Length: 83
Image (cartoon, rainbow, N blue to C red; front, side, top):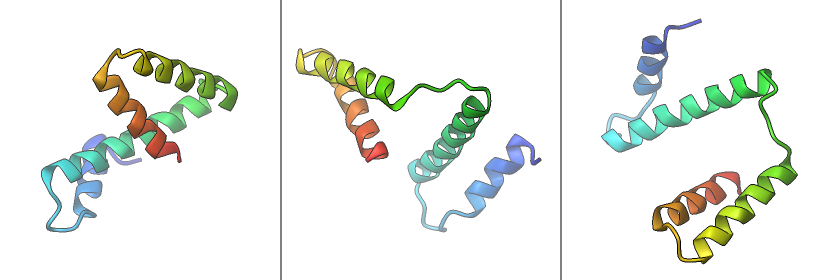
């Protein structure tokens, strides 16, 4: 298994030469999220689809109540990622 530094270097090297700093950071964050998700899955730290739907509905209700512009943005990003 590669060290964290080597994993990051590999991801960076795979990016196009004209990639922006933000694009590279997004790729690194995405790779880490996948890694953490796999670790959670292997350790049975998961929730059902029904529980996730319930949580998203709760977040949407909070947003519709006028609370948290940042939360609205996060929910839109989450919905984009899972759709």
